[in-house]
Image: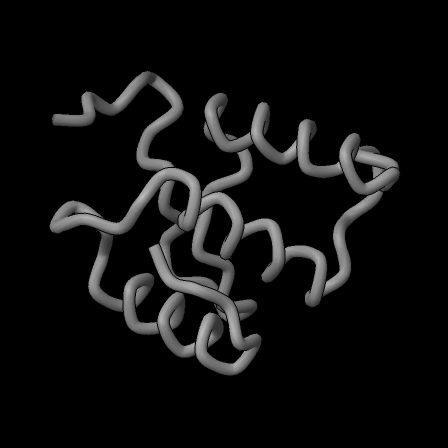
Length: 89
């Protein structure tokens, strides 16, 4: 069972931009920094929509989808994986 640290949930509240992950969460922020470093992106600048979607899909694929994942995140994850032709978690 995942215990929520002081940063709150790893999942973003539903935003008008459709982001799934809370990048202010310490675990997600660390994963984002590693993602940017692997891809040669400057972490000081916001990701493009495609880069952010790629990060979120990669993060959820690596960490898995379970019953604690909000339903709207699971739905969007599967929809994006199908459109990208990627394997699901």
